[in-house]
Image (tube, rainbow, N blue to C red; front, side, top):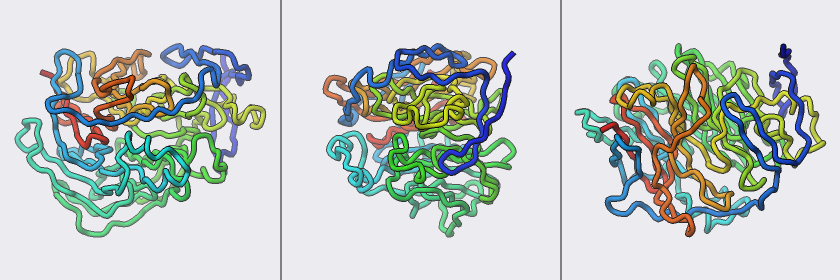
Length: 440
């Protein structure tokens, strides 16, 4: 019988707890096989292949060209001519909110990245910094209303309606605005209820939001400011975490830590357990480290930056960190492929797709830059059973890669959301479009 214990440690100046069975830190550099809760994951040794930079070149969608869905589904264009559509929030009345924002070019220049390469794969320049509202009044799958709902934001991403408030997660803080169901524009000033770290090298600028079922708590996904803490862990306070707050911004705690860049979050419909998708670290080779989907344990520690995919020590910290912390790293539930940039996720709660999709999760993969081959650039489907992923992923929406040898892509999927009519929406930020997938 395994013994479960709690060890309290300080990570980036914050007090967190992890739980574990009888685990031992892995100190060797050979290939290893990891037993996650739903699959066997083979991990190569660090630097088994050279770390490679290969940015995609977004060429846009030719006339009549669309992503490809499985047999029995139809893909249509929901909206175009947007300005970097990112996250989607569907209100209970069916209103669809989409945040528009992008990585700031000045932030990338500051750290000396290859601007030319980045510019081909991301829409750099001035960020739109707004939220759009779409409304399908007649239920034909096309928006009858498209309007700018809220402006004057600072790299907004997550959104949430809770009671008579509309919440927005800017990169530097959570704001809320007075809101009435059905209104088409916010004109009144809001209030910042919680500041978030965003200064200096603000890598992983997205901040996502989700509330629990009774609306008593809000959860905030905050990514790290670096790859593996190379700018100093003193600059990572309150980052690489999922935070929990009260709806008025008080009572902040670290709900879970060691999550390098958690973005998509959703509640598994049967167990109501919080799940998230996480972007893992770069520069260890093509095969490391897998992005992942995982259930989130309160007070859990998931490794970053000291360990990856369980108890594997990061080479940057080998022998420099208390192995007690590494031994208490939780292994994620499901690997999603290294460098895929898995961002958005949503459990399918509609009733229009075939039975096999009921209760499973859709995950959008924005696509790689730190791999010798283009990986990601698609939407996956993950079957679930009894509240846990089954261990297999299926390609659901593909066709984003135009020419893998040339590194050309038509677009890059960001977020996925379930509509009240049972269809799904997928934002495609670099082509400035939103796709709709429905059952025929």
